[in-house]
Length: 214
Image (tube, rainbow, N blue to C red; front, side, top):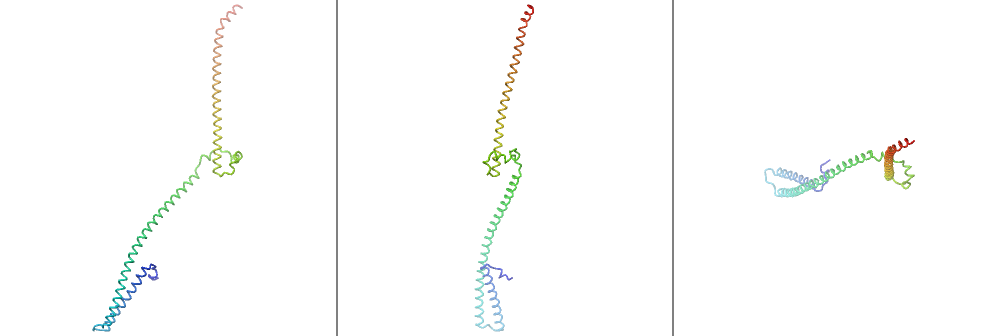
């Protein structure tokens, strides 16, 4: 494939076209000068030939001047294109880095989600009542989703445990009261034994007196 066919930029295509035209004019001028000197031999060139050569030189100079202008414009355009390309490349690099960061963040979040899903939560070890029994007691939760149903069951278990704890505290208070009452009774019995012993000791002289009388 020819190089010209691979170039789509209009300014570069114009440069190549003008360059090709200038090259053809230069070759034609060289050939014209060579033929003129060959035809003239050692003699001078005719005025007509000199005029034609001068005309072709002016056309060639015009094309060369135009080619230099186009070349300068193409260089400036290439420099601007390089600057735009560099800015676009920086933006692409920035977006690529941002995409990589998002990818790593996505992987991190996926790992965190997987860790949370595989975590041995304490609530899974709670001795909750079966779902069927819970729904039989609380039919208002029949249409709840899995998470809401689990929260309701945990709340139910908490309420049950709080009630049982309250009962335990009340029973503990009754137990402590009974222990205190039993201790008081034991103390009363002990005091009664002491009083009885004192009474017996005090009654011994009277008993001996009765024995003498009898």
